[in-house]
Length: 115
Length: 114
Image 1 (tube, helix red, strand yellow):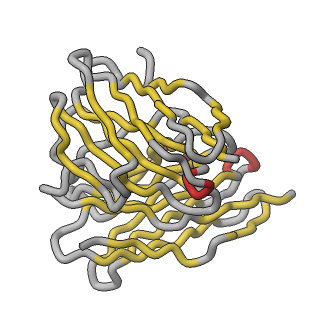
Image 2 (image 1 turned 180 degrees about the vertical axis):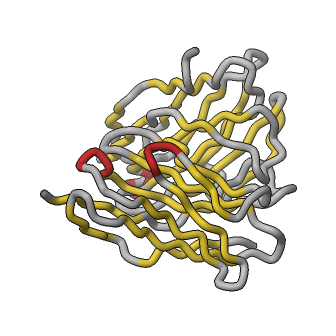
């Protein structure tokens, strides 16, 4: 079975531009979460979506938005890019949105470089 | 609120030596604890997780971790390091009712030398 897939793998943008990152969860998983991992740091939670609804949001500005589609895939959008948005963006999927002991399965990530 | 602290951003061991990576947690509710490994230019892979069923948790690749409530710790160990264990290791915590939010530590880079 395919794991979590993300596209693109790498992306270079300039300050002020907008970017869209895509994620397809493991088949049967209905919950998708997004994390930002800045170089040298642990991943930071951005969003969680379940059944197309936002279930959780981390401490990120409104420039960050996301959505989930009927097939449970998801997009993360970042507007007005800043140099500090350069990071590895990770998508994770799980069966349910309940957190706790639920295992999250991570994709390979999209590496975004903002110049 | 929950948090984890990983002591030691870099750990170096010889091949065949004991691996010990430290993680301490803070949580106002019973925690669920995870160890993930990240190889260069890859995503995160689950090594093991604590879900309150047993305090000693065995994971993949010979790793295990012990939950010690009195010490608020969940250290990761492996009896004998292998070159292929060189990677970044992250401890994470979640709690029921917090959505699928994992709170990660800053990571420990494990180096294995000959």
